[in-house]
Length: 280
Image (cartoon, rainbow, N blue to C red):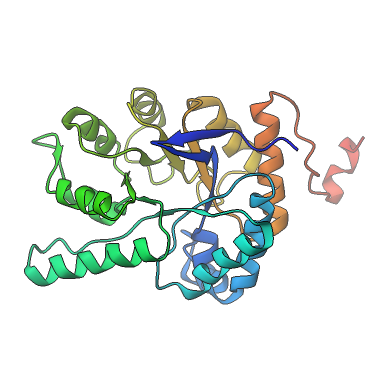
């Protein structure tokens, strides 16, 4: 069976569709109640069940999760055992930026934990990256020691950001990173400038871009959000999407294939009484 199209982040082959973790970890971007529901629902087994659907299609890369998230780490081990396929893990650690010796020691321990748990691509989280961005100087201050420390632990460095300036300044200043995470969706959800500007920024990048929030955290239907994403990024770029159930994963994969192959989707539609007059 043919596997999902792949691209490369430096020397690592990754699928162009990446498994997101917000719907595993409880970050709904909707309400505290929904986030609480997700956290209570998602066990290690349920997470592995979702990941297994992706892995069987060659979609073997996951973005997010922390070394201390025991149920996530257990799920990764489980799905690897089930499928015989190694999980490529893109980690997004947060760092203490206070500049003290204590902070430096703490940050080293954070990176050691990610490396020990098998992180392949390490991308400082938006909370770190965007705090260091200097629009006046057009640079990301003090990021080089972090990316160097990532390299020292045999992980590939990247940058996670919600700001469209970050990849531009990183390219301009030659920061040692292999990829970027960028907010990108048809609704403009959580995006700081218009969608067409971010679209242009992505196409001008020297490195592959991982686009996140393609469905605007559930505000867009899968067909709408994925059709936009696949139609407007480059062949080297990726879409990261989270799913709560195995059936959702199957729908996302099927819709993605249909868009990449420029054909109608065969995903089963919702059936309600109001659709009776158009049912064929």
